[in-house]
Amino acid sequence: MRPFIYERVDGPQAALAAFAAAPADADRQYLAGGTTLVDLMKLEVMRPQVVIDINALDRTAAGRIDASPRGLRLGAMIRMGDAAEHPVVARDYPLIAQTLKLAASQQLRNMARLGGNVLQRTRCPYFRDVSYPACNKRNPGSGCTALESIHRDHAVLGASDACIALYPGDFAQALIALDALVELAGPEGERRISFGELHRMPGDSPHLETTLQPGELITGFLVPAAPWTRRSLYLKVRQRESYEFALASAAVALDLDADRMVRGARIALGGVATIPWRAQDAEAAVLGKSLDEQAAAAAADAAFANAKPRTDNAYKVALGKRTLVRALLQAATMET
Image 1 (tube, rainbow, N blue to C red):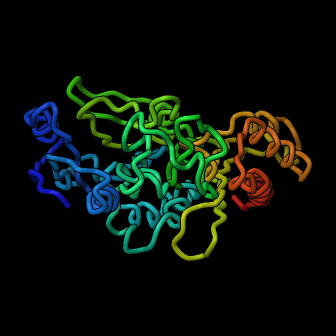
Image 2 (cartoon, helix red, strand yellow; image 1 turned 180 degrees about the horizontal axis):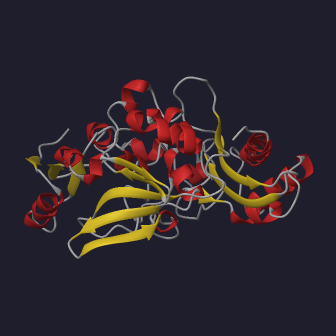
């Protein structure tokens, strides 16, 4: 790990001021739980010159969970474990609770904050190992080692000729499926965006991973109340039952009538895409239909219609489809 300047701040405005005061050409990073940043600093993948500790923000609105008939607000400084065990989250938004419980070990959930979790970086081994010079995420314009190397765990949706690295998170799938908004504080003031606007497709510039402006902080997430939030679940397929990243996952939320006819559906996919992936074609495929195995299979086919698998990761298409079918059928039989 290389030397860096460390500064602790006591609120959002102080954080923004510290960011602005640092040299404009310096790599400046905010530190909360540190479960991604410190890890990558040790590997020398990230080399910030200035680290701004924002943990004091947990004494502000960024450290609260608020629930009302209109929906749920999750402060960005809430620890993953606290959000997963919150009674309202577990009862009314089980999809959110499940993505958090299945995301990491209990030790990590006790440290990691929600805001940092959605910004976690890829687990691509060629990104995380600096002995590989060709990585467009780490060294823009250098190439993508994964394209011609082992890519079993890489993306089949949203990839480009510049990058096929996988987005590894779970919680983000719940947020994009449930139409969440992101609260941001930055040099130009506060703003809100839909969660689907937060992450960038890799395209020709995979090093630009989000739409955040320089210095902007995530302060919270707003999840609107909806008929489908209680009938929701997260199905995660992984190589081992303990702490592991998804080979394929499905976040599903359904609104059904008494005859299991689909009045509303929200679907997101994990473990298969370069960003948190909303499967709107799959949602459209089940809308107005009785949710049986045939309808679920049609949704799965629609979800992966534009997949671009490669030699090593081609299995993810079939696995992803089976995962989504299982998730839809399980959600249809939930007690709400």
